[in-house]
Amino acid sequence: MTTKTKAIIGFVAVFLLFYLGFWRWMVCRVYVEPGEILVLTNKLGDENTNPDRDRVVKSGVKGVQAEVYGEGRHFFSPLQYHADTSSTVVEIKADEVGIVKSMTGEQLKAGDFLAEEGQKGIMRRVLTPGKYRLNPFAYEIHKAPATRIRPGSVGVVTRLTGAPSPEGQLAEPGQRGIQKNVLQPGIYYRNPNEWKVQEVWVGYNEITLENVAFPSSDGFTIQLDISVVWGLLPKDVPEIINRFGTTEDVIRKIIRPQIESICRIEGSKYGAKEFIEGTSREKFQK
Image (cartoon, rainbow, N blue to C red; front, side, top):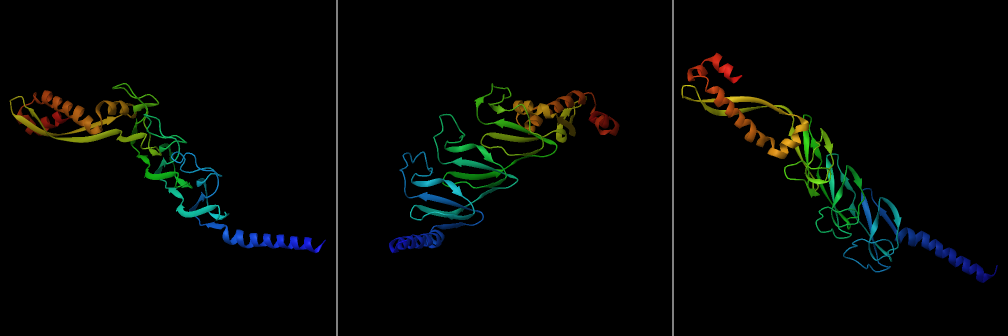
C-alpha cells in the first residue's frame, strides 16, 4: 500500500469520524420530547405546483412535509430541513370527541358540508378517545363533549346531512331528518356537525298541572291541581318527537288539553259542594 493510498484512506476515515461524531450527532440530531411532534419544512426539492390545495407536501417537494415524527432522536440536515418541535400530541379524553378540520386537499363539492379524506373542511370522521400525532399545518382539532345517554333515557337521532326525508315522515338511512332507531343508554362518539341527539326520558313521568279550571254542575268555577302519570315507549319516541317536538310540547299540546277536557266533562257531573267533601273530591281525582 502506497503512502498516497494510506493518506486517502486516512482522510476518508477522518471525514467519516467527523461526519458521524460531530456533524450527524451534534448538528443533524433533533430530539423530540414525549408529547411533542416534529414538523419538517423542506428547503430543497421540487416546487409545490398547487400551494392552495397542498398546504403540506410529500417527501421531495419544498414546503411543510406531510409526515410528522414522534418522540425520540431523529437526524435531519439543517441545510435541507427546518425542524419545529413546538406542536404537541392531541389527546382526546374519555368523555370527548375530536372534530377534525382539514386545511389541505380539494375543495368541497357544491352542496357538501362534510369533508372526506383528501378534501378541505370539517371532516366526517371524528377522533375517539386516545392520543393522536397530527400535522398542525394540515389539521385543526376542536374538542366537543361526547354524546351521553343516561339510564332511563333514549337518544332521538337527527341526521343533519343528506337528502331530506319526506315531510312528516321519519328518515330512512342516509336521509336528513329524525331517524327511526334510537340510541340506548351509553356513550357515543358522533360528529355533532352530522348528527343531533336529543335525550328523552322514557318510562313513567309524573307532572302536576296547577289551577285547572272547569265549571261544576251548579255553575261554579272549580280550580284544582291535577297530578298525572304518563309515559313513552322507546319505540314510539322518534315518531312522537317528529310530530310534536319536545316532551314539553307533548305536555302542552296533548296532555294538558286532554286533562282539561276530561275535567270539564267529568267535573260537570259534580256540584261545588261535592268538591269540598273529601270522598267526592277523591273520587273525581281518581
